[in-house]
Image (cartoon, rainbow, N blue to C red; front, side, top):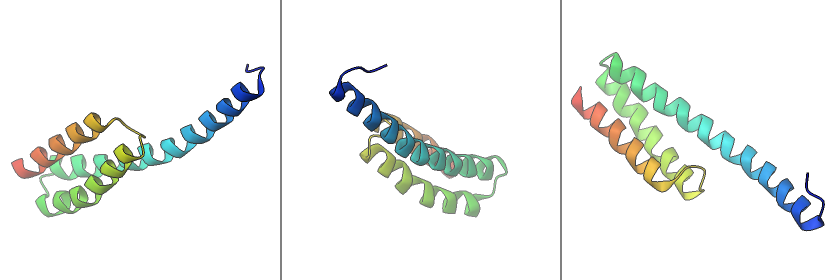
Length: 86
C-alpha cells in the first residue's frame, strides 16, 4: 500500500487508467471476435463490414496506449489477411 501522497496519487491514476483501457480492450476483443466468427462461417460481406468497424477501434486503442502499437498492427494484418482469404 502506498504511504506517500505522490504514491497514493499515482495509484489512483493507475486504477482510473486501467478501467479506461479495460473498456477499450474489451470492445476491441468483441469486434475482433465478430470478424473471426464471420470468417469461420465464410460470410465475406459480414466479415468485411466487421473488419471496417474493427480496424478504426484497434487503431484508436493503440493511439490511446491501451494496447501496444505493434500488437494493433499485427492483429489488423491478421484480420485483413483472413478476410481476404475467404
